Length: 156
Image (cartoon, rainbow, N blue to C red):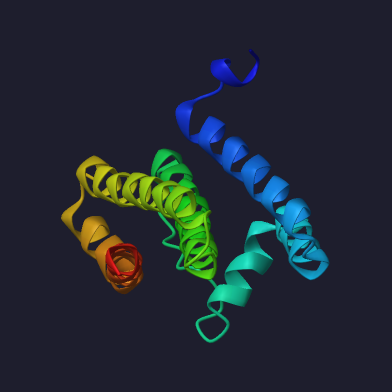
């Protein structure tokens, strides 16, 4: 009952984490379980450092608007989670868990892409919008391509 009062994305994240933990425990993959728990307790900045070690983490655009900063922080979280979910889904290819993992990954990816578009619509200043597109554009395209790869894996 408590889960139903949470926002949809948080509910999906909790359900996804719970399902993954159950599968991991059922498979007996101790190493994967440790990795799951380590990533769950690792801070956002160190996760982004592992995903983007060369660039020094996810892009940050420094605007005075706290609402834009908050939206960009949310985008960072959503982007990181979407990439992790896609990787997990691809890892489960050719297992009974693949369809569920792929569905969750694609839902989170779609939410991330929508959030990015909403940020661009929210920014009034054309220069700020251009700066956000420049700093995030390649990563958003990468996410789209990874989602397509996941869709292609589902077709085969």
